[in-house]
Image 1 (spheres, rainbow, N blue to C red):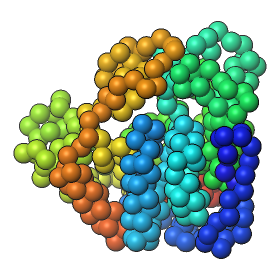
Image 2 (image 1 turned 180 degrees about the horizontal axis):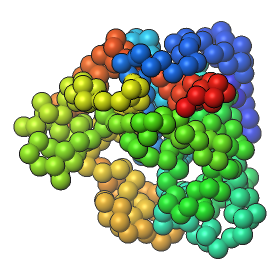
Image 3 (image 1 turned 180 degrees about the vertical axis):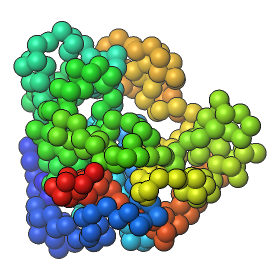
Length: 367
């Protein structure tokens, strides 16, 4: 396995203790064996973990290790979305997690966080560039290291999508693309496709057409998601929507049990094909609360409305607070129940599996 040595900015080889051949990635384990869409299935579900908390690296790494164990114990896989920043922090501080993820059967995907130029408010002068310069600039941001305090590039060090791919020995499958500008999104999709991505997040939690589960854009599969087990309205107050993990210690806890919600949504599904479901959570949601930890570094408020101007104080205040231990246990127990129920009753897949299924259907001429 190749891991970057961030002190000397060169590659060093670290021997895997599991006895696997260096650099060899074998597609085994619980990966979906059938490559066609089984319309008799009760449903397909993807367990998506958005990972990004570089302020609390050890807690972040510990929960990912715990999640991998949970998935493997239930014979399923998770879809782990990584930023280049958190990957670098793991390399520097938690090589045990790098080895565990590398050797596991989890799907590696990729997303970006502030101050990456694809985040709204951090575009710099991207919209004014011609097509060729725009593509090259985006390619550079996925090749070189992002300076967290300025948003500029450190061209003597690797970074971006290419860095994550090198660290884990395989190219991230799906990418989260936060840009709202249509021209920037199109340019970014083309660059990521060139780098090796297979799918893109175009609608975050829902939006897939019932008659067209597999849809493509710029040769990338749009990550399908008919509905999500992530957030929903408080009973009696449809305008008040909240994440299930924030409601388990409230009087509405029963209404926010994720397994109960999933069963209810499945019962209401009324289309000829089985639904494709996304269960999305950020790794820091298990141990932090209130806001994204690094929000106040890049924004003037916790709700991330007003962007600060660089240079950013990367040692600035933490916008989050510790989640109480009792709440942590409630969140973990509820998620553990959800994974076990889904493993027993649904087809658990990752976007890697969904890409295979979509390619098989496209090659056969089916929708």
